[in-house]
Image (cartoon, rainbow, N blue to C red; front, top):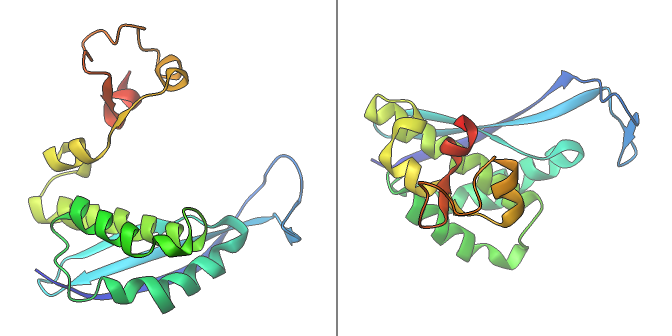
Length: 166
């Protein structure tokens, strides 16, 4: 399987912040949403969403003009390996901002492809459970309601899916 195309759709939805009405000099009456579409040669399409808020147009530009080209022709089935490689390849552009947001949107779309290919929800994929595992700082332990000793989580790690269920 190969990635054949990556495209973006910038749209806006009505939004009421319940607070300040301006962000980065822009009206905060609508929220920008950048949808990311990843197509494969096997006809499977994955969808993701790239963060951006007020700079979603910059994220779109970064994805369309820089990031997407690195993924074309690549095998989307090793999501962890491909995303690690791309994060290292593009680290020169920083650890936050439009390039990282673009990578995030593609990452989500690749997991969508993995789920569709397996005929399962992404949270049921064993590879996704491994990828979304993290070492928790103490604050996250408390936020998730975890015991200090980790209870059944003896190795000090917890799946994001477990945290959402707890």
